[in-house]
Length: 217
Image (cartoon, rainbow, N blue to C red; front, side, top):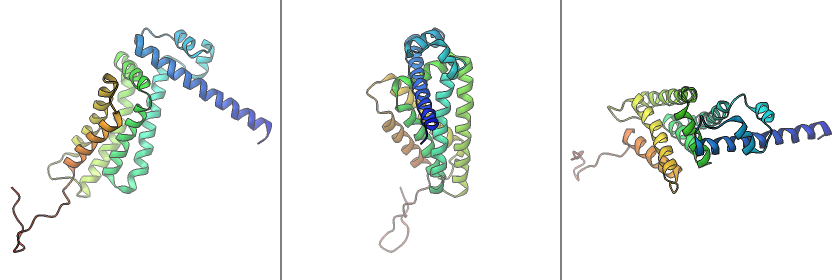
């Protein structure tokens, strides 16, 4: 590695560290005092950087929260793509559980993002657009599962996708309210239950001693 490449690497590392400090500072302040009461000046001061440095990385405080949501949903899309060879049901599972893993990495960040999206109409709209994309991808997978005969009779693919996404928001809210909650465990349980209930049973029908199928009661 030459000197110019080494300098660029150090610069990129410092930029990543600064963005991480700004993410943390913004979400801590928003969690503590609300989105509208949190100013760029306070975010910069909490992060230990100049206000001008803030604007090198973000155009506004809303941009910080939007960037966090983009990171989360991007991870979810990549997890879905990686799981698609295992089938549409596993792709849906991977997508929603990836959302949970990202949210569970920092309870403070998750609370801050949740508080900001509830308080700001602008961010609420941005969040809706991003999660609508997630829902659209899972809906495609749910219909693919129906076409492949993987869903139980009467299961609505649209409702299945919505239920899985609702499981994520339910686990997120629970973990935000209860500090001792393992969000990933809660979410995995909800997802397992939803997919089990929606999947076509692969268990063989019980048989009597004469070889005839026994009617389930």
